[in-house]
Image (tube, rainbow, N blue to C red; front, side):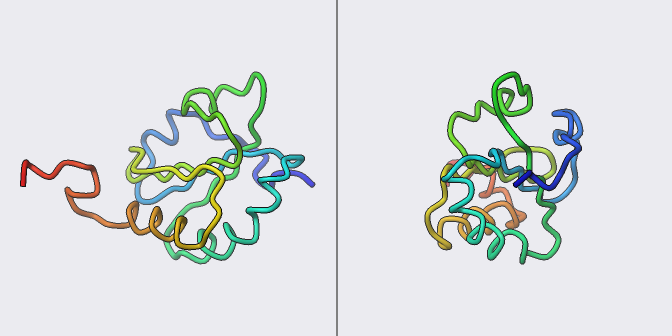
Length: 117
């Protein structure tokens, strides 16, 4: 089993990306990654307008280190190049749906800035 996207994006490419992007870090031999795949496909791959990038991570892989990935799978939800939230070893549909909703919401509260209100 291999990760489907063989071309790993550069961090700069992700930093300047537009719209919603989910970057999934994992490995083909990781049991947690394999167990999470049906759930990830159900939620992330069914979301219209969301780019899903799967990255094989591991020792010597700079992209995962740049996002401080410690456990697999880790899904990082970006909006216009900025990290909005992440899911580490997602265990429920609700966990992924909440993260997806957070990245798709286009308002100032999604950034964590509530202007003191």
